Image 1: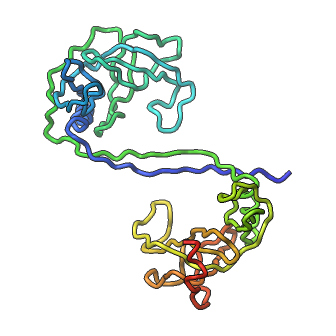
Image 2: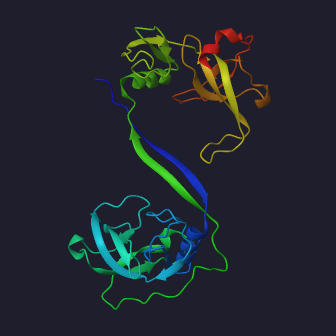
Image 3: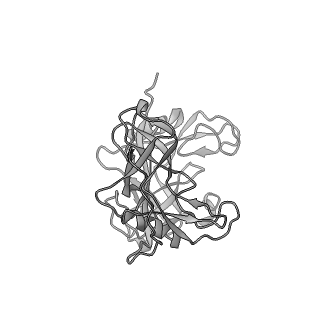
Length: 313
């Protein structure tokens, strides 16, 4: 039985967005320890505020302050918090209808255990020590047995309002490549590049998927391809990636390896970026201990005629 390969992978990027007047006031208010809602045309107060009435679609602009105390309307216990969640110890996810609001706000409740949480319990905001204008300025909610806090009269006008936010988006997962790609990775460790041939259309796919994307039939016949290939198309990268130690500008290209019917992508090196071209013949460059080519460089061969790779663009 061959080893089942797996590896932890992370997909992460910062999402930047501008804020309209409603969201700007709401987040700026959190920075200033003020919770704002927005009033609809029928007199309801929505928290968190939205820019358009969810019932009538009317534009909403009347901001009103609500209290930092409220009532739990429903909850669920989180026994194993994940990275980036509000609390590092077990807590309850709660929907809280703040005093003065007609809708509920989702956040965390710091409680010693699920037996200490109930629908209808009274809670209050616990503010973060350092606030920047984000929902995390509310560190969490905590049980509250005192009197309801009276809402203030803030109108949502601030001297230095926020105009935009950056939200990091991240997905952590474990990837298992399966039979076909495991064989491909094993071959790479021996500095071979292999694909699989479709028994129907006879095309060779690299990296192999285990099935032909055109015919939909399983593939099993392994075929050595390359190692040289042809640049079919490319782009010049001018923005440096945070986790790559590669100076910009550099070229990322689709490369049709000899004997393959599908182009794979790789970095081009060993040539000035402005001299890379379609049809350029390239070969892989391996580094010691690597499981895949570090980059491709010109092989010194004449450029490939367009007719030989036009179907792989």
